[in-house]
Length: 517
Image (tube, rainbow, N blue to C red; front, top):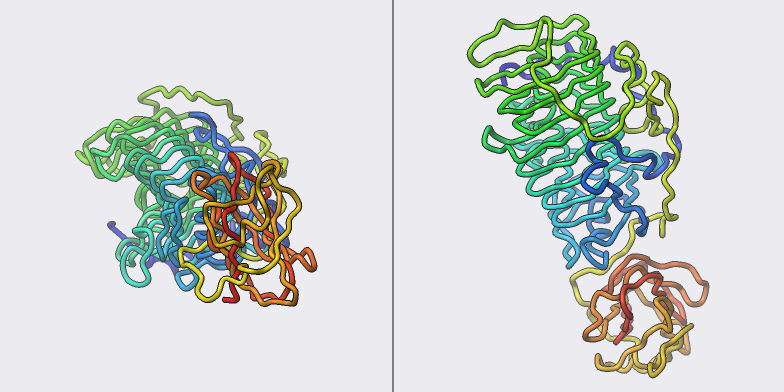
């Protein structure tokens, strides 16, 4: 990197003041809608992007709880929407293990999974010095969150220094209304804000703010990594970025209605055969906003309707091919989806009112006006706290269910409620249908903080979503999906109920174990 963003941060205060004046830094509303609106751009192709639609909705306030929600699903493809509130950081983000997840400490890891929505709600969701890593995954939505100051060197490090990074056979990701920011360039330990590599395709970045970074983002990690593409960037604001806004190595990108302020060295860098359709963007107070830079491997662009406001252009050279000062198209790019273009002249106003986390998820109506999209129906969160989920550690102490009474609300022919407390995995209880509940009860109040739901042989994975209820009061103690060990705050009661609210196949509970700790 030729110059460091950090060296200009004090000087950049003027740029930030401009950004604030244009509406970038907006206060968080009291409550943000979850999973609002519909995907746009290339994320609508290849079967579309729905995230966790149709699945359970849970609330998380720590990174560990996010991982636990992923690991508590019946499978790695079981749909889930995770509503996030508060600050997610290294101190509260631990690895959680399970058959439906592959997580790691110090990063939000969406690895080898699908059908997940992560959305900021309430007073806001901030991933502080902690990146979001998407690897070998598909059908992911990330909406209304801030990711800041993720480092690849220094301390602490996370996600290779990327705010959001995607790699290794990733498909269909929609990132919307996010704020991605750093506090410097590579020499200060930061890398890209939004990176895609190693066969990542069908991605849309919309209504987001990317600021104060040496590198905005890339498609392709090297001139030989050309398996990425079909990416849409629209209604985003780039502020105080040195380069890569974005860098395209191969593939196809559609870049429209973005507002660029203070691109210090270069902007859209199309190279190694990449093809970019660049429509109705507003470039302001910037340098070399479009072209092929730092390589002799040519890239291509189709341009129309853009405004270049106080943009300077360098002279062409062997490794430098700016598109300006009078940008002309050198290819044509066919776009397979429908879209509406705001006039470039109104882009600073529209993007200033809609882009970033905490803007009420407002969008353009395609005619230079702002509107609130129709909310996508979602289930009510199962709890206001991170959802307790099965853990890999077996409970210790005495199984309080053995010898205790049992009852339930439904059963299948030939099974008994008592089979869940007889200590044998060869006997089991099943609900009469796909859902139902079974309880353990005692003659006197008993303290319980953990249960273990063990499935019968041949039915593993059949239990989907569930709730654990205080049988005395009906209050929910925990909720999640998949059988296993479930922890919750220590509660004294005389009856505890395990309620199956969703399943695949025929659920069979061999043992309903209860423990004091």
